[in-house]
Amino acid sequence: MFLITITKPSNFPFYFLNGTLPDDVFTQLDIALSYYIKDHEFLTGDWDGRVRLLQLSNKGNNFFPIGLIEKVESILICNNIDYKIQEYFNTYKEYDFNWLGFELRDYQVDAINCLQQQRNQSGIVSLPTGAGKTLIGLYWAYLNKTPFVVIVHRKELLYQWKDEIKLNLGIDAGIVGDGVEEWGDICTVAMVQTLHQKVKNKKPLINYPLVIFDECHTIPADTAYKVAMSFLPKFRLGLSATPYREDNADIKIFGAIGLLSKTITPEYLVENGYLAKPIFIFQKLPPKVIYSEDFNTVYVKGIVENEERNKSIADWATKLVKDGRSVYIHTDRIKHGLLLKKMIPNSMFISGQSTNRQEIIKMFATGELSCLISTLLKEGVNIPSMDALIYASGKKSAVATIQTIGRVLRPQVGKNDAIIIDFKDNGNRLLLSHYIQRKQNYIKVFGKLVNTEE
Image 1 (cartoon, one colour):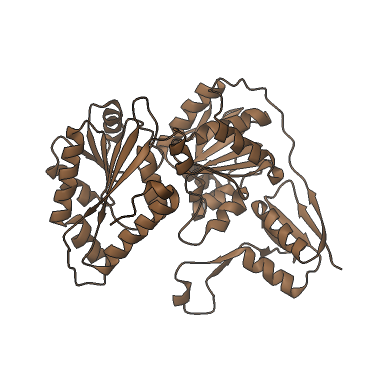
Image 2: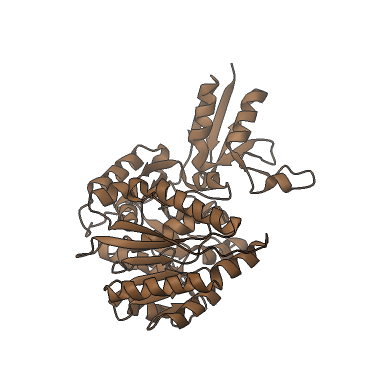
C-alpha cells in the first residue's frame, strides 16, 4: 500500500506529488501527462520528442498543471493507490452582479450545470460560433459572484468582450492591450500578447478569482501557455468551438484550465433553430496537374495562381451576390486575395496589413459591401448578416476550417441558411488529400448536415 499526498499551494498553479509511486504507475502518469510533438519520428539526437507536463522540482518532487488533477486521480484509483489531496486557494471578495442579459437557453443552462459539477468548478465548454459562449462566461462570473479577467488573442475580441460585459453585467471593464493598460477593480479584458510581455519582464499580473480563456485552443502556444500558468485563480473557464489541436498539444489546454466539461454540437443547434442551416456545396474542378512534392510550389500553382479555380470562385461570388447574399471569401495568402479582388466586381480585400480593416469590416457588416475577401475572419469577428462563405484557401487544418465556417452560421432574423462553397482540388496528391481531410472535418463536426455524395 502506497500513500501519496497531492498538494496544491495557494501561490502556484500546479499540484505536487509527495510520496513514492511504483515504477509502472509513474510510467502511466508520465505517458498520460505528455505528448509527442508533430513529426517527432524524424528527430535526431537524444530527445525522443515527447513533451512532459509531469516534471521534477528542484526539491525532488514531481508536479503537474492544475487542470490535470482528475487525470492523475483516475490513474491512482485504477491502480489502488491510496492518496489524499490538500488544496489551498486564495480568498476573494464576492461581488453582487446584476444580470442584465437574456435568459439563458436550455443548452447554455446545461453547460453551466456541467461546470458546477467539475472539480474546482473549472473546465472547458465547447460550443459552436454563434452559440453564446460569451454569455456563458459572463453568467458563470455572475453565479460565482467573482471578479474576473478575460484573456483574448485578438484586438477585435478585446473590445467585443468589453461591450458584452457592459451590456450583460453593466460593468465598465478594464482594458489591457492595444497600447492600453487599465486594470479594472471588478473585471478586465486582456490580450495575451500584452500579458506575455509583462510575464517576460517579470512584472506582476493582477490576479482575479476567475480567469476566462476565450478561444482556448490557442493556449498551447508558448506565449499563451506561459500567461495561463502565471495566474492564480480559484476558477478557470475555457471557451472554444474547437478545443483541440493538430500538433498533439491538446493536453496543455486541459492542463491550464481543466477537462472538457460540455460539448454542444452544431448539429444540435441547427436542428433546434439556434444556428443557420449550412448548405455545403463541393465544387468539382478540372484537374490541375502539378509535378512537384514541394508543398509551397503546389499551393501557389494549384490554389493561389490556379486560373480555373479562381474563375470558379469569382463566378460563385458574383452569383451569390446577385442572389442577395452577403459573401465572405477566405484566403490564406495576401496575393491570392488581391488576385480575386481584381476578378470580382465591387469586392474588397483586407489582411492584417490593412490599416482600414475595421472600416471595411463595418461596411460589410452593415450591408454596404456585399463581398469581402480576407485572410482574417477565422475567429473573433461577429457579422451575423454574413450568409455565404467561399472557402478559397484550401489546406486541411480542422481548427481553421471549422472556426471560419462558424462565422457564417450566426443566427439573425430572416436568415435561415448559409451556403458554404469548397473545392475538390485534384491533379496533385497533396491538394486532393487536403480536400479529403477538409470534407472529413465537415462530416465530423456537422454530421448528416453534410452532403456526402460526390
